[in-house]
Image 1 (cartoon, rainbow, N blue to C red):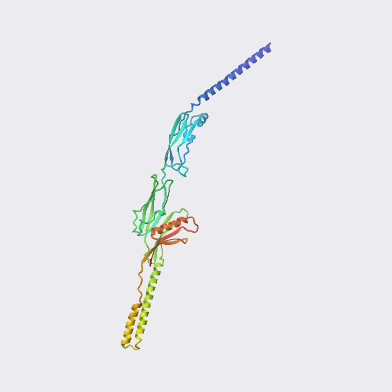
Image 2: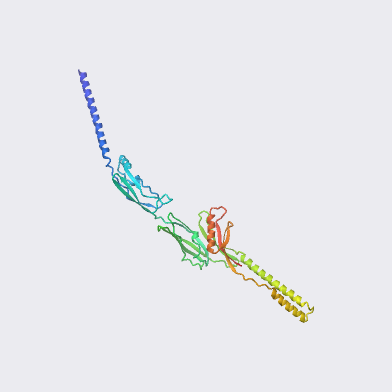
Length: 357
C-alpha cells in the first residue's frame, strides 16, 4: 500500500516538473518572439557625421562603419542595421586618379523609409613644394630679365601649378656682391609657397685673354641645379681670325712691295748708273708706280659677329644658338635628358664668343 502511494507521489511530482519546465520554455519563446517581432523598429539610424571634409589627394570610402553610429547598440542591433542600411556613394574619383577632385559631393544613407544625407567636401589646403638653388651666380652686368632663373628651380603639387614667379628687385646687377631674391609658385586652388635664394653678382675677368662664363651644375643626388661663374682662357677663334686677317694683309702688302720693287728695278735697268736718265728714271718711276698701284688688292670688309654656345663636360657641344637664353635652355635640356646617364657628369657651361667674318 505504501509503495503505491510513493509511486503516485513520484508521478505527480514528475508531471509538475515537466509542466514547470514547459512553462519556462514557453515563456522564453514568448519573450524571444516578441523581441524579434519588435526589433524591426527598435534600432534607430544615427549618423556619426553629417558633414565630412577630405583633403585633396586622400581617398574616401563611405562604408557603414564610417557613417553609422553603433555605440551603445548590441551585436544583434548592429547586425540588423548592417543588413538593412543602403548606402549610395555620390563621390567620383578624378580622371586617372584614385582620389576625388576638389568639390562637394553627397552620400545617401537609406534605412527602411528614412533617408539621410552626408555632405562630403574635398578641399586642397596643401601648398606646393618648391625647390630653389642655395646660390645663383651671375656675371656683373647680366640682364636679369632674360636670365633663366626658372630653369634652376622645380615645383611639384597634386593640383595644376601656375608659372614660377621671380622677384629680383633687390639685386643690383651692376655692383658685385651677395643679394637675396625670392621665388614663389601658386596652384590653381590658391595655395602658395615662397622661398628666398641667394644671388651672387661676380666681377668679370679683366684679362683680355680670359673669358668669364656662367656654368650650370647639377647635383647628381638631388638633381638640384645652380649656376657658377667660371673664368677660362678665351677661345682662339677671334685671335686666329685676326691673325689670319693680318697675315693676309701682310702678304698682300709684301706682294705689292715686291711688285713695285721688281717693276721699279725693271724700269731703272735702262741705265746702269745712278745718274739721272730720262729713259731709266721715267721708266722706273712710271713702271714702278703703275705696277705698285695696279697690284694692290682691295681688302674685303669684315664684320664682328657673336656666336652663343653651350657645352657639357661629357663632350656635348652646340654653338648654333641665337641668344644666351637659348644657350642656357639648350644646356638645361641636355642635362635633364642625361641626368641619370653615368657618362654625363651633370656639369656644363654656356657663353658667347666673338669672331670676324
